[in-house]
Length: 357
Image 1 (cartoon, one colour):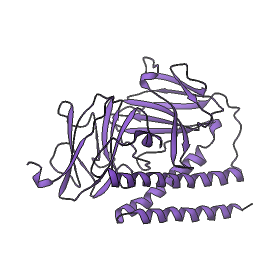
Image 2 (image 1 turned 90 degrees about the vertical axis):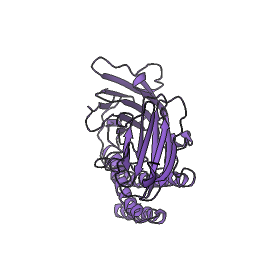
Image 3 (image 1 turned 90 degrees about the horizontal axis):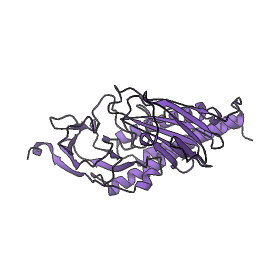
Image 4 (image 1 turned 45 degrees about the vertical axis):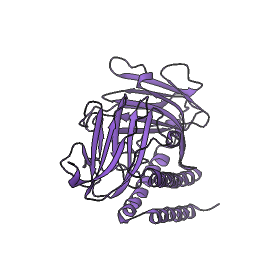
């Protein structure tokens, strides 16, 4: 059996290989710099998942995507929570909805460390949850648990819970509060053995590799088929990576020059919520902490049931102006939540000095 130092050297060598992928698939220096940062962020997220929250006997919520760690077109309006579970156990989620606009809880089979997918086994949102007058609720999770309203069913391969909390304004709205507990645990102690250390180290790196490869594949598709466009795309393909079945995803890729403006116009279907966001080449949302890089159904200036968005490299005096922060290229995404119709936006590139024409 290899010593731990041998396992560590193997880990470092395989991490080098991920860096090679980043370098070879970057179109420019900005993409390459942000790509290496992306790998470091993913490594931070993956070790948090596999080393700090890995014991399904004592499940706890953690945030696998946030302001400085981003995966697969993360939503700037969302606060994400994840928990690792074992389907042989049963669980109880308790919480208060606070000022949340939309909340969903999904039972997933996390296979990012194997093939970059995350299959949905069961989903529930606020419309299917009984909530008391103070905003409190409970949801039970166990095998064969699909008869009650406040319940989610676990399948044999279920190993993760994803909670999506969507806010009108994430910086000011009162956050929902959730906790998860194992209702069948024997509360065994959990020592980091040699075997577990080696497993978690390998899983952490496999998660990084699987994530990079999955969204590299997506971006290549968007560059080829979704350039300066927001088509419907294959929704099952998007949901296979952990997407919410209640959301209609319109992914695209932008590329235009600093003297140009990307103009996006669309009717708004009847839906619970919508938003549009800009991302870099690695499908990380741009830095919404400091820059106007996204709009939603509450922050956009609307014309009845339509919107027009002006995307530029730097700010201009235009309606619903969001910026790429100087980037000439990157991914982008429009979400319709709870829409019953397919609405495809119109996207065109216009010279800034011709906008009034």
